[in-house]
Length: 203
Image (cartoon, rainbow, N blue to C red):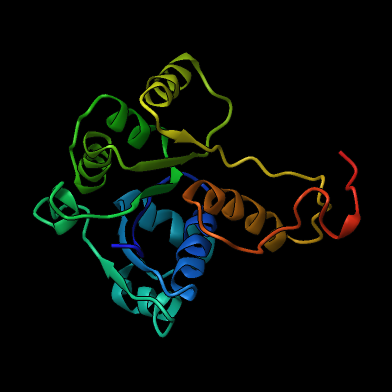
């Protein structure tokens, strides 16, 4: 149980965040239960050139051969282990999280495995971290986030920071993934923290 996390990727822009998080978790020897929505596969193709017609090959190429192991659950498999509260996990991260998935979670729809698994996290009192990626936000988006936040869900929007003076897209991605790992209470060294090396970055 100690290394068992659920990670979901949806159709919001920012697929690289989810891919990088899974890789870091696996490299630390943790086990990942992975699910990707159909729109998520489309974004993986559009943003990272993944071949959606060769899903298992893509997963193995990017996540295989690491210290930890992953189990991929098709989004329609509502009978998967993670759909039951009796299957114990540390928690779940949806990264990136579309407004559609966020709405489904906020309203308890459980229309697919990802929404159902998030519902399990809520009812079992486990960590649930959402990384929404949308702009601008309208009132319904904000109300859904507030609803979930009041239930204890950690809302971690995909907002890059610049006080650490990133010099590449990879560093910007690692900063956001590092903030997610902080919320998961997992040690990492993906970004320089304020005050590290006795240097104060410019705010």
